[in-house]
Amino acid sequence: MPELPEVETVRRGLAKHLADHTITDVEVRRPHLRWIIPAEFVSQSRNTRICAIRRRGKYLLWDLSNEMVILMHLGMSGSLRILAPDSDADLLKHDHVIWHLDTRERVTFHDPRRFGMIDLLNSSDESTHPRLAILGPEPFASDFNTASLVSCLAARTSPIKNALLDQMIVAGIGNIYASEILWASRIPPQTPAMNLHAENIDTLIQATRRILHRAIAASGSTLRNYRSLEGEVGRFQNEFAVYDREGERCRRRGCDGRIRRIVQSGRSTFYCPHCQDPDKNRD
DNA sequence: CCGCGGGCCTGCGCGC
DNA sequence: TGCGCGCAGGCCCGCG
Image (cartoon, rainbow, N blue to C red; front, side, top):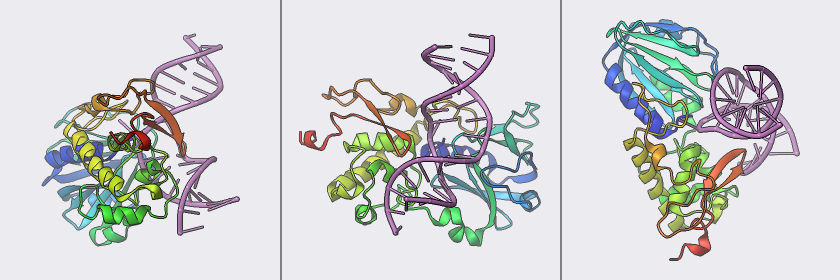
């Protein structure tokens, strides 16, 4: 479910509540997520201090004082929730992991579909971890640039929409923001990636950063169940230009197109056939 | 090598 | 009210 803006929003919440605090206990109620949580997860993270919370693509990384790193992904339906100190709030169905902190707060990992994952690794193994090693550049980093993206896409016959979802090309974009970015770039989602010119790709990079920045500023998007750590809903869904707006008018000034939904590789794509048309982009 | 489709799971909203 | 279906913010893997 969560894409980069939602994960970044959760990261900021975690950093505020967890940084420099100690994990006093961990309960794993359901170790079977996308993969099984390692058996030593509890013993190796208990009684450690959380030094920092980082994000890489859609992954969250908790740096622990014993040189271990907790790695997690929220999948489609995962969320983290913080429970106030000594709160007697009931745990929910699908609260699979609970961390207890020295602040007497608790953090829960909730994931009905269990497409999420939690792992524990040595910090020295971060660059070789199979899930992390294959990630492409961060959208805001300098290695995500026109020259490198041009060469990445040069041999890709598949649609640019699919390429944006490929975490090896750029890390953090998911199904919502792929559609929004292409609309902002005026690029039709079906365009074979290899057909984009350098100037299109430059536009795409700028649009990617602008959309993700705005979405982070709005604390992400809430469609169904996404919440920030403290339970706040995101606001970026109010700014969607195309996502989930099939049949509605295009929001671009002067464009009278209507938003269309198509399916690419089994996933919905939303776009405006009028202004995302290379022959009409000249004005 | 690349690209696609299936599979993993649960829940929700819709039409009948 | 109930049931079946399609759909959902992701990602891995096997196959052609």
